[in-house]
Image 1 (cartoon, rainbow, N blue to C red):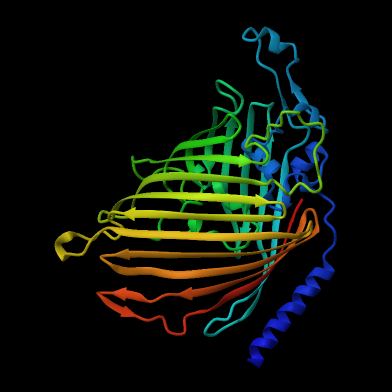
Image 2 (spheres, rainbow, N blue to C red):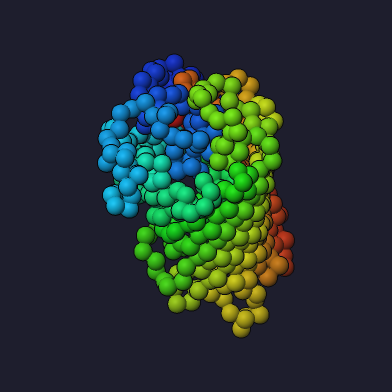
Length: 445
């Protein structure tokens, strides 16, 4: 007990030293530079976006209700405005960003992880260093990319995502937009992984029932998405289904679809009947809304001549906001028909069934201080035998030193359930434990 208390105290002191020694980061991300506005216009606490920030993202990183009047950084025009009037007898005009649109994202981390042996306190610095590029060539064409330069002790893991978005192909504004490239599939739209405030990932996005596929993995493909009547959202896509490579290993593609509806609050596309006359930078966390979504994913992966697995996932997500309180919930149900290449010759059912879920609550104590906790769990079984059964609890405190400098204290408690193998129940003895406590510093520039 004394040893545990000493380690926790030591880690707390290290965290305080880091907090005291941090200097204000003067540079801010490129979108903030472009519009000459604070990060808090679109974010609660980086990278988590508020309702306006989400509308900005869905709109292809272009301001809702008209972009041109809010741009403060000089652009390079590609053609005279009058060319619009004579199109198609002239190239439709657009623009280039006034400077190369690049930003950086850096994690510094101190980790307390009580293993059976070895180091308990570790300096994971830097934990991650990423480069982002993003911008638009007018209000119809935009792009976004993320390149991981350093992660978990390795240099240049490589491209994470890069896609182009073309807005308003036909019909009303935002009704038909298309994304092409490497992207996070639209089934995650209800709880976008890069929008989370926690270090831990939500179980519905992170759980690999077979160890091969999870919803949050970026994939190469094409996605059609849109918002109808400002409140109804949809996304349908076709992707390779391969996590680590751009080229598909097989001819089979994965397909998915999602629909959602938002009650109350700011419209999904940021539409305001009275229009926008300013970019609000404070007290913009309250949305007072409820969004409910449902999705389906059908895929296939092959790892050898023996494993040719068709799988499907069905899930739902929920996001509710009431003033300073944010609530999220979701569940995903899956079936894999042949994850291990087993046959019926052994009278063992090939099919694997799985369920993952989570609930999360966050409360804004002050504009710079957010407290939250997430609880999630998984169960999976094959031939009525438990493959996975456990629950994760993640308490979190987030502190904004500046709009672009964030500190996080977070823990992970793992509660493992009994397993059943061959009809025999094996109790999980002494398996409930604190998996880790992390102090994390994040800044963007």
